[in-house]
Length: 134
Image (cartoon, rainbow, N blue to C red; front, side, top):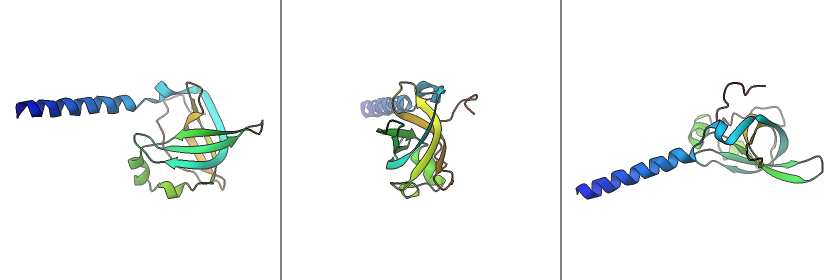
C-alpha cells in the first residue's frame, strides 16, 4: 500500500512539473521589441489549455497569405467572460495588435483584438510586462 501511495505521489509530481514547464511567462516566448499589427480573417479557433489560439490568415503587401497564430487566455478564463468558439466565427475579420514570438515565427500574443465593426475581443493572452504598452 505504501509503495502504491509513493508511486501516485511521484506521478502527480511529474505531471505538475510538466504543466509548469508547458505554461510560460510572456518574456520567455514573446518580446515587446517585436510589436505586430495584423489584419486578417479567422480560419480556426482553438480553446485549449493552457492558452487558446486564434488562427488568422493575413495577406501581406506582396499578396501572399500567411497564417498567424494569436495566443489568448485559458479556456476557463475566456468562458467566464462569455467567450466561446461561437464568439469568434470562422471568416470574421480581425485587427490585432500584439507582440511576435521571439523565434520570428508567425505567432503572437494578442494585446488588442477588434472585429471589423470595432467591437473589442477580450481574448486576454499572456500578461505583457510593464513597459509593453504603446
